[in-house]
Amino acid sequence: MAHGNGRLETASGDVYDGEWLQDKAHGFGRLSQKSGRSYEGQWEADLQHGYGVEQWMDGSHYEGSYAHNFKHGQGTFTWAAGSSYTGTFEEDEIHGVGHYQWADGRTYSGQWQHNCCHGMGDMFWPDGRAYHGSYAADKKHGEGCYLWQDGRQYSGQWKDCHVLGLRRGKLALPR
Image 1: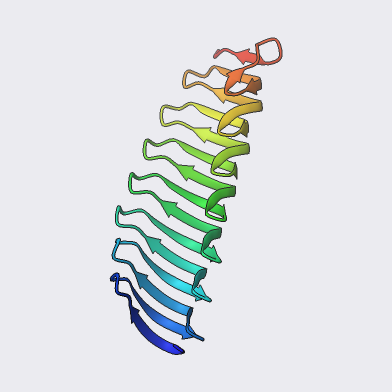
Image 2: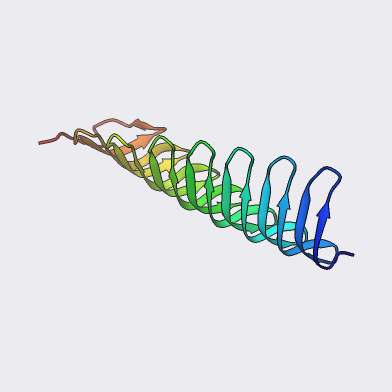
């Protein structure tokens, strides 16, 4: 049984270098896979568990908490194309509260559920538009206020990203 510090090289070319307990990766260790994926951080019973940094061949990387091989808790994921998310993860999904920045400059700060904007949040666009309000499955849904770059705004009800009519809301024109 592997116990203490050691190195394992598999026939497929993967390498684990770190701490072992009763023949399982346990404690701090580094895994480098032939596919280009790597993980450096805490392990428990052969599972990524605790704080760690994971990187992929395309340049994407995650730094944060893991629980039983899942991104779980606080962390930051950066995609190869330039978008990033900092906040709460639950079993590998963006879930809870966090901040997402797209490569095109858009940002969203607020509540998430199953990788979707869901709950209260603020969206900002690089051209000056903004939305503060409720989301459901990535769509404006419920009470919210949308501000255009020219100063106009709509405050009222939304359903599936559409205004529910100006009778219930108020369209304010710039002065």
